[in-house]
Image (cartoon, rainbow, N blue to C red; front, side):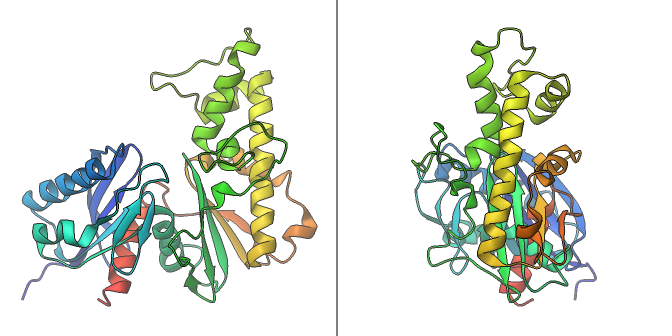
Length: 317
């Protein structure tokens, strides 16, 4: 019998990076490695996952790995680990269990990245003592996990929580990837605010805002410009924080949670949440008795831990 601690080999596939590591039953990450990810197609993304698992496995595991948990962007069937799509424009259904089973011969479980983050909140974070809560991730995109009666809602097609496509501005000329106008994601996500700022640069030649080497204008740059009274930054961020607050209140009225937990890279530094709160209505938030707060889990590791907790729970180990 092995004296090694039992671990989950956990994978978190994001839009630009892939994180893999060993996670204990208590949520401790014993070791982790970062890889580049290619999500321009599901086949390429799958190859990124395969390469990471093979590389990590061949280099030797620290603990006794008993199962594999996978967190990935897109829509995933938690029951059979079928990855339906990265987004509506990239849909090449792949069964992750079938594709990965021969690498380690271990059980494989998978779920959407925000669902995994919500599971981490439920088991390890601020949601562990709350039966009803919402976890909303403000990052490159926007999505949510909804827990009611201690159960995470997945939906009939595993599309629950795609709240980034909730319309918050009917007069907006900005079209979302879903085809509608005025959705919160293109107005208040990391990618969204970058695109909205870039659209305005030609109208304000005096601005100091510039695209970085990746063609993006990041939140830190926009915040600095906002504090310097830059009209682009103020226009974009005022609209973003108002849209984010509108989303939160819509979800509060829809699901009646005791707590709202916010996560994602947009919350780093506290500026975004501070300004969101300025638009929250007391009447709308009065039943959120356990409050609204930013997650205390590391945003860079939350989905990795959640994928591990998913594998342990679904595998009943």
